[in-house]
Length: 337
Image (cartoon, rainbow, N blue to C red; front, top):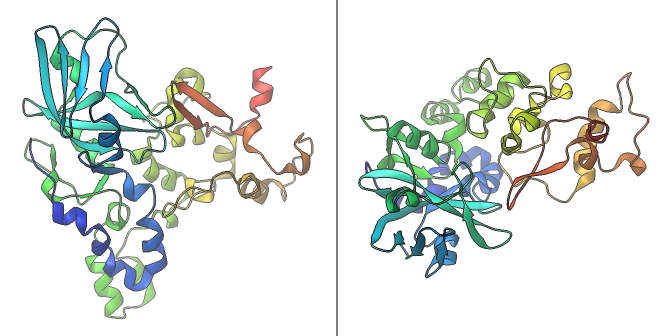
């Protein structure tokens, strides 16, 4: 393994944002309790570890998984392999997936823990069926660059090792201020020196100041955007699992393509929890554009137009235990006919 957790960095994740809190206290407080801040945690002590402790899971006619507080053993007859489980990826809204080390290499564990049924199940992207050996049953080996990409989207301050992997001694788990805004030293110095506002703004990155497409592409760096050169009119049909990656659907939407101003930030505050179970909030976002255009929506069937999502951004379940809002905005009801 190329690096271990800096426990001081974990304990001080909030303290690391304190210089930002001098001017942005409300944002810091909201962000530090947000899903982004809780997107990565040490496996020991995580809800996933607690749920799996002493648990046994078996492939059909295949390997059995036995869990301890720090690892997993895959076993069938005399064939067995044990790997450590070091990190829990995800905040647990849908699921948590463990990443560990086996024979000095990172691996993504074959089994994730799904929140709604409160049970383990195969990790998305892993093949169903009986594994070839105990070592392959543990999960998919991640080469150093691949492991870096995974940790880089779930942590702050991560650096690369000489082989392109993640140096875990430098990171703070979870997404905090500098992960999205870049190093803040020059910005803080400029503020404290009372430089002119225009100069201060140049010392920090803020995707909210970018054009809509560029802003979505920043979010898509982790939440996934369409691959360069790929343009799918209906990505949820080409690849049902793509609904997991909101920018893919959004960037195929007519609303996005024609408005020139729709971005992730139109509806979502990246520093806070998403607004849940409040249809009127999102309907208000839709009507902010559609109520005042020449092409006013007049044929909506939903009374008082208070819930746009079911017809225009329907929920989809592309895999067991996983339900997402499809972000390709359209008249889904008409497509189904």
